[in-house]
Image (cartoon, rainbow, N blue to C red; front, side, top):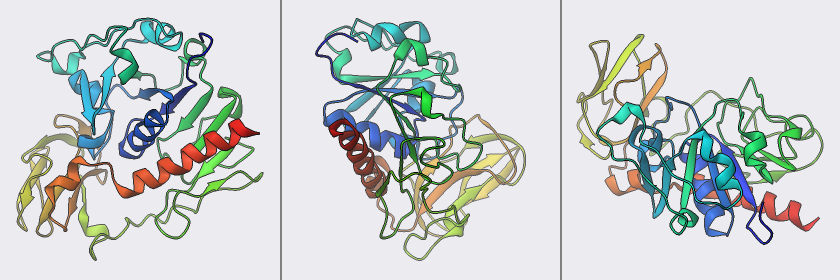
Length: 293
């Protein structure tokens, strides 16, 4: 890293919570890079950096995320010019070229499931924001400061700090005591305006998911939101389509593929959520606290 450069924070995952963290840390002066899957499984795509994988670039509340080849990782980490690329999943999308002047305001999104870019990026901070909850493969030795978001992470085993992601009195709280962990996953979706499990759309079977509605669409009960292998998935109540996986993905029976919000405010679909910002505040606190020690 060039002398005087801002610290680099790498986030594993580009979903809506990860994007909220990236947005807040970037505004606080940190450089950000995102690592994602080749076919991201995000539901709240409108506010997810992962969407850049499908379309070459994606902007969330003024912050532009750009799909970037792994070969540009070292250049980005060292403050040199780098360039985004258009992904083959959307051949009609123009390449998102990022020059040295613009790159400071854009965030690269690399396809890297197993953090193989660790040597090239040489990040000062690694945040695992994938919300895997189990099968954690992030390790303490991956960066000088490693932070885990949500359940499954244990301080001293996987990371140096854990940020609480469960709504309630402790949302956004930072745990740094050896052996500390976030609240366990309940397996029950958080209630929104009295709707909990019903607001989550799940695949009825294995197969290709094809969207029939756009995120932000107002839905009536029974409206077909998408199909999976030809089977319709319908809105359980009146509301707005808050999230839906990318059309064309192969999904598994029972997998979460969408989310209906009964508050029926389309604008909320395109804003970083209160929860994401609370978690982001915790992540920022963890970074600043560690740097002050």
